[in-house]
Length: 454
Image (cartoon, rainbow, N blue to C red; front, side, top):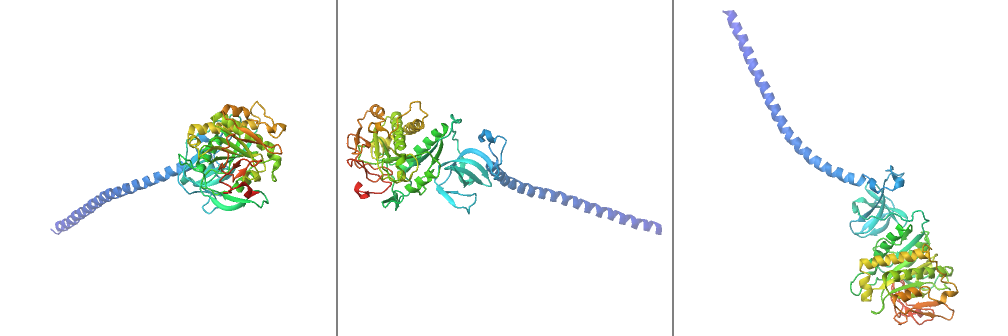
């Protein structure tokens, strides 16, 4: 009896132990499944959000750091990183916003070289740590990659890459901000003019001179580079602040062989055509460059007239233009048209016409450097009293006459006396050698009479 009682107690304990153990195990299993499912939902939710953010980050990073091998030049094939740690690129980017800083070094603490407006195209040569390295005026500068994007500009293959590249300095006249502060018109000169006066404005279109000249300069630069030239520009933006003197000094430090200023003047409504300016034979600063400067100017005007069909206004010789007085190389100012004239204003806003103008000026540069088979006579020779571009004058249909002062210096002006009070980019009432014709301009002051500068 006692034996059965003890057996019952042991069986009861065993039974309850089994039940308890089973309940505990079942509870643990339920909790485990419940915990797993709950944890899985939260984990999946978090992973989805994280992966989305990470994907954006990776996409942004890959876009900025992965080089596009299609834009690498032949000499850089197989090379991705240069000695400065920049991914090597050879493409073009466009500024995405106004007021974008171009810095001397890839750092927000570095000095600002220039501030660019939206839409400016830049030649990019590398990228590193969120900075794009761009080439401007022959030197490297830096812009945040967040403010530029690659453009679809396709530059033609250099057709004359085996030829020695000539260096051409192009100065698109004007800028957005005028500067009435005075500067000397030449080294050690006692005569001063405004550093930069307001831009001319199209009588019909309302377009600004600084936009027109920059557009033309960019077209000209693209053409010249396909022909093997090295081109340096005084500005790639209209929001810079540079005086006439500073532009000439920059040209002197650029190793350029010629200086060409492009402007769009203003005069009486009936004045139109292409006009050139050069120094005189007796210029006190750089008279040794007179012959070549005249030849350069004559080549450019003749070729531009031939390509566009514009009226040829001739060449004015003067010593009152700051940029020409400071240049230490053959130099000229080319007035490509008059914004005060309805026809010129309309033409200078026409893309096809501007293409022809750029092509013509490029042809004139070719001719000057002897790329053209027809060699021209030196403009400073005994034939100086004859119009070297008379054929172009006849082709353009005008009757430009030549005036000569007592010293035999020729002055090509139009015969219709509409050369009075012509407002150009770099002129301030510059008179002809014989004092009969006056050419006024805006960039170098508002002189009311040529005698004010004598």
